Amino acid sequence: MKELMLIFLLTIVTCIRAEDEDWQPKTVADIKSIRNECLKEHPLSNEQITKMKNFEFPDEEEVRQYLLCTALKMEVFCAHQGYHPNRIAKQFKMDMNEEEVLEIAEKCHDSNPDNSSVDVWAFRGHKCMMSSAIGDKVKAYIKKRQEENAAKNA
Image: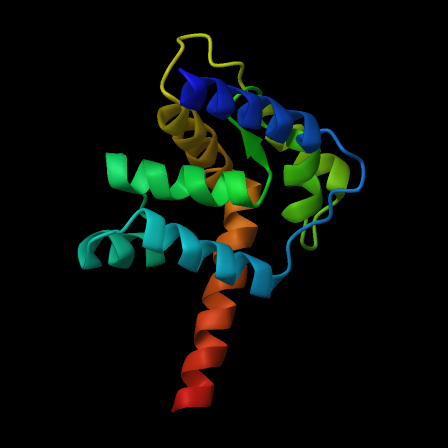
């Protein structure tokens, strides 16, 4: 019972912290570190990793748990409130107008009316954002980085 209460309190603290104005977008190095941590915590098969590198996100528990982990550690999602559109807008605006990104993130945000599990809820938001202009910009950015890395290693 104490463990359950601790988890509940940590969840609330995380959500309260999510409202802090001092949150800063994560750097590329931060994101890489978070992805590595989440991959250790939620291992994926080689096939799942390959699909994700090709921007295919299978609706499988392992993938959902990995994506939830990254969103939680990036502090753009909390298990109580879901995605934080304002943080999504700051993190993923790239060369887009922040208001435009905020509008997309708000359209993808939901209050989990079906009471889906947290990983399903986070996956649903991720899928929505990846199918939007935000996703297009993220995909273009990652592809460019992959090409640059390939050129360096050639």
